[in-house]
Length: 65
Image (cartoon, rainbow, N blue to C red; front, side, top):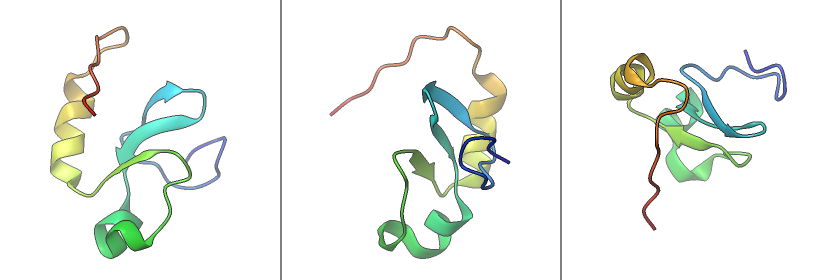
């Protein structure tokens, strides 16, 4: 449960204040018809779980546009 947004954010990896990359059951069910509130939602639960287990604080992250 996110202490900031008061909603479930499984496998959350925060990168900017309350913004995070995390699994979203809503995004998995409704896709882009839902809302992200600034987060990066992921619908592949096993994929985000694997990334979460491998990520370390301080890892370099590259974002492609």
